[in-house]
Length: 465
Image (cartoon, rainbow, N blue to C red; front, side):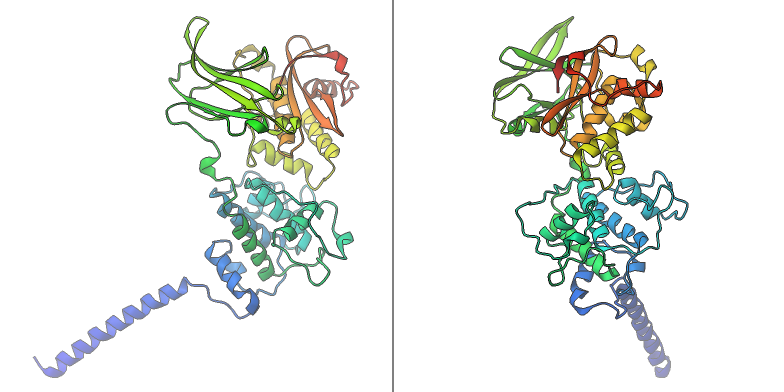
């Protein structure tokens, strides 16, 4: 073969290799963050971090000095929620006439963002610093992060009067947790925020709280085999129990103290659920029993617990079997949507009370098929918008406990209804107020006058949880 031909073939082969390598190199670089030059140099490293944490999206990673819109920030805050929890946000409903953006609807359905009115979202409006703080705060709450605010901490700004009452806690929280800083002696709550500033705020939030969110895989805990009695939270008024047995097994939990006894059904599916220790401080006996024949039960295990609760009202904040909730429960998300930016505890209670008596219908068919071991589920009541008195009182309790408002579910008898009944007692200004949403829903429907606070003499308490 001619040497010139061989050299040409070798040249072509080498050229092809270089071309292929070049294409591969271009493809790799295309996946890397390419700044458009509009970013501030002091934010550049944090913008890169946000990109690496999957907190951003392509359309927002340019024009960094532009003010960020409500639609754009909704997209970012959904990414924050999904990165914190490992869960995927979903679109459930769209009440708005001016947007069908899926990320906006995800943020709305999560309870992170609300409309400017019932039908208007205003996606292109710019967002203020205080509004961003509120949305971050809500995203953290829904992700299961504890959002405590230190009242003793310094908040050294001269323009705090400009902060709206509904945003004050959120702005203070952002400052205390090094998410948002001030400029000189001002926090500038009404200023708009640029794209790069918003991205950096969310990046700082994620870094601060990424290990403190409630992950999807630990939202519900299970015991794989046998019985678990977890008393680690006894001084918060809670014992957690799970039993993995045969599906046909009838299992009960019995909690005793000083001659007083509470008995609960336990589904033998291994799911760990909470039970209250509401009989005061002292020695409790917690037993799990299984049915052996007829009405006879055998002990599977018994534990003796020494309980010392500093604040007895904290017992009525826990998620328990009869009042089950977590930060991402449908009942909690609905509560947050109803309460909105209200900060007064009494008004928060009124808003949810009004929602229940106006929207939950009594389920007369359910009563026909009720079993002695019936367990209410607040999320199911929200889905179906109907239930019996047990469901009404469980839902009200779950929604208010999620806001750290002490509330009891009470069972017994009332002059307002025939037969066994369930209602609530809620702590308002240091006093336990009797509230009966089931009766009031019926009175409301029949246009009969009723009062939020009921006379205690009309109610005979048998059990409280």
